[in-house]
Length: 450
Ligand SMILES: C[S@@+](CC[C@H](N)C(=O)[O-])C[C@H]1O[C@@H](n2cnc3c(N)ncnc32)[C@H](O)[C@@H]1O
Image 1: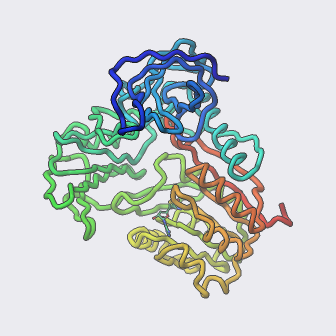
Image 2 (image 1 turned 45 degrees about the horizontal axis):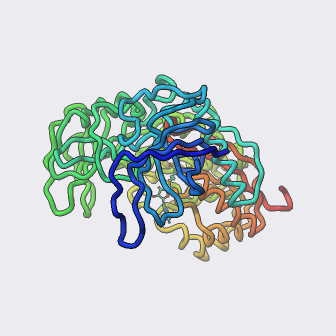
Image 3 (image 1 turned 30 degrees about the horizontal axis):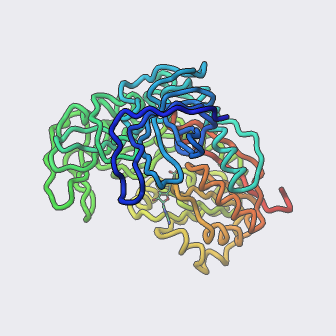
């Protein structure tokens, strides 16, 4: 769908690498914007070369400023800086720095929520088609939110600190920090911690985690390596400092409490030191219910929860299989395993292993077990071919794969298919409004059942 393009240079050509020809960075080009692509941008073409354009929508005609334009590069990157023909779903971003050349935290603030979900559905479908050879109609479901649509949902935000000690977020593909007075996708309680109003000294990052129990949020500060951090007073938060030898309490608690209701049952989890927990307040319930629906765990069954974190799915599986069943949870972060142990205290059917999933999956104690159902909730990079092959070898009747990256999900879907497991259902949730991120829960079953 690309049309004719015109180039206008707004900055002098820089020489680029010797012999590599000029670099087009700063050049403005007029392009027809094509489909959305994974990563928060759309695909356009300029003189035969692919250009990934941010701040644009498919079908628009825009003036795009090249942000990465090496002469020898296979593709360039650009920001839409003027819209010549707008999509009807284009809106004014709610945040003053969600704009070209500014904050890199949000990718889609210039689109309505419905349009964002449509774009994410296209990305999930495209990744499954390209990497797993599957053609699926994907729907991305809106997550219920207490705040204005798509705003004030982020209960955990990691801010960076600039040379002057101001907190903010980094630009897109940049180390530069854009100082912030507010972050409209973060909850009032995250912003209310006061970190955006203060200056820090010798600090690299400031993470804020607001638990659902209403207690003051936890601020975890990571100092610049080899330096002593200077912290401002934060009377409305608990504060801790993270160093190579652990987490050091400065004030208040070093953990937050999360309360979750799934299928009418209440659960409480301790999450220490800004450890992993889903960032959208609706996520634990939505994902918990989707995982239970995908697996339908029955009393007496044996379940495996891989990449178990603070034990969200472990608790749900434990209740479903009951005292006569068993759940083995495997998690790499010792601290998360300690948290899970505390939260799951009293559930005798649960066993918690601290260590790498890849190693656990070749442990004879595990490979000799009967496994009926598996939850796989790996980090962004996915489980990978070896872990997937080992999971398939367990012969479970169902696997629920929770994925925060559709490309990793699609790669692992292809590996699961090689090992006899087929995709039997997929739900996708908009748990990261305004960004390009999307969370999926996929159900896999042995091919004969599929
Ligand atoms: C996406 S989180 C999921 C956590 C948990 N299932 C939840 O929903 O809260 C991924 C988890 O995998 C852990 N992890 C990452 N790589 C791992 C590995 N190779 N082996 C074991 N755990 C790993 C991380 O520490 C993190 O807790």
